[in-house]
Amino acid sequence: MRVAQIGSGTPELAILAGVHGDEPCGVRAVERLLEQRPAVERPVKLVVANERALEAQERYIDEDLNRAFPGDPGAETHEEQLAAELTDELEGCFTFSMHSTQSHSEPFAIVKSVTETARELCPQLPVAAMVETGNFSEGRLFTEIDTIEVECGLQGSETAAENAYSLTRAFLTATGALPGDRVSRELPVYRLIDCIWKDQADTYEVFVDNFTRVDEGDSFAAADGEKQVADESFYPVLMSANGYRDVFGYTAEKLDVLSSQATAD
Image (cartoon, rainbow, N blue to C red; front, side):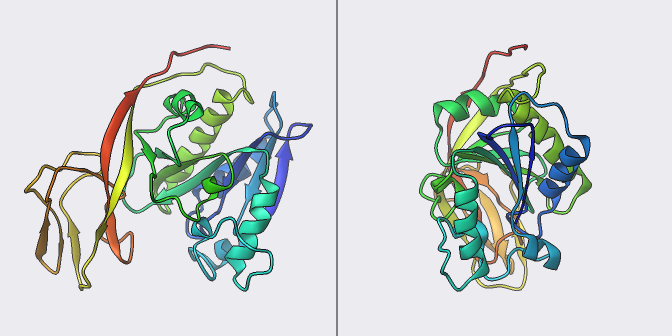
């Protein structure tokens, strides 16, 4: 784990990258901030988490770090030890954690619950949606640390790296660490309901787009040509043919559409 800081004082904000070793976009954003050293109005902690996995270009060494919190310093696995270290390092910091995905090219935010902070801040970020994890929070960083996660774009893409930097700047502006106009937008909010499981197969297909309503009776995916049909309407989230080993993605319900008044510093 690599830890740095911009600005002087005790940070109450943190930027987190490299939770997964096959998602370098956030690391690129942190490196740009360290090169530029912008004059911040609040100190910011910068953390690159799973350096061993990043070096190996693998998602993790022993287990998924973002399912290992709160961790255990005496554990046998690298990620559970690291989770405990990260929990201590980020204590007291409102944390912005960057990820990427194989399922959706546009950035979107993920939160444990739709708090007042999330309702105020997320519409100020250049994201297409906000997703509440609902019952799918176990082991994630935001069970221990006040966190907003963002999926920055397609894994390994240059666009995801650029998005990560833009998202980070927007987060720092929205939280008062960087000066500038705070631009808000309408933001749809979804809550995860259930997993969409995969049958074991050689080939998988997905026929629907994330965040676009699937109606009852619609075919939405297939395993070896065997189609899955919706028993009831839902919104697909993190849906992809090969993003996850056991699931296509998640069903979700649409909760709300948020907006926030734009303010200027």
